[in-house]
Length: 270
Ligand SMILES: O=C(O)c1cc(=O)[nH]c(=O)n1[C@@H]1O[C@H](COP(=O)(O)O)[C@@H](O)[C@H]1O
Image (tube, rainbow, N blue to C red; front, side, top):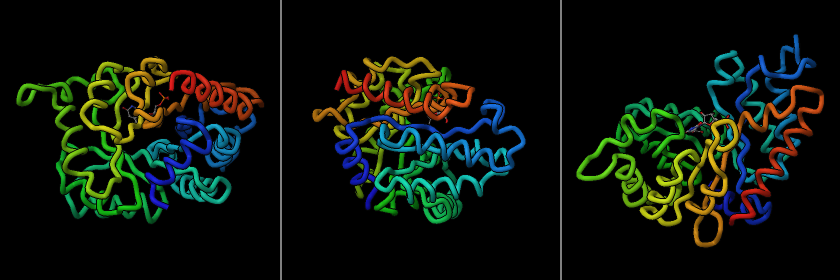
């Protein structure tokens, strides 16, 4: 099923706009994983199984696996999510972007090797660098627009033809790059004003919104400023606040409570 179709179904059927980000950091794992050679897979699997009923998506972050030589764990984790939780799309957070021939390989990596349903991409090399992702009509392409980090404005806010660069990205993606209807935009939860501005430019294009939880974004401001008319349109992603809700043996139950609490808070403002 196409990413956007699966996402819309999941928004409705699970009544959730929450995405759990799977960013394993072994140093933060509960003590029971000490010395376990498969800790990264086991920890992420437990979190995914505990939180699945409360999410519209999962988002594994590739560097958090690759830094530990755990690409195999990432492959198995995505296969596990597809098998155990069918209908929940997986966004591979890899922020790819390169010349066309290399971008082809990145698309094959994300969609054929890892079997992700969508991938995050950096737009700054231009359309041809994103084209191999756009061409996979059944897959989602989640393009950086106004990121959540403190330095986001260093380049993204530079004024070009009278308005900030991130607004040009938003317009280009919505008007020119979205022929297959498979684009989404990253807009950080830490920037409620920019969320409102980008929503006004792009209509119903879905937003991936990281930055609630550990980065302090305000849930009410995110939802009221950026939801679509039908009360959806958002993939509100939280990683550390859910993954590391408890360092004890109750880590999975604590993650489930954190995911449910975020879902309910979001739903109050939809
Ligand atoms: O593309 C992303 O997911 C992303 C974009 C962005 O603007 N800010 C951002 O924090 N992220 C990712 O979201 C995750 C951080 O989530 P927290 O632990 O909830 O802060 C990391 O994997 C980041 O790479």
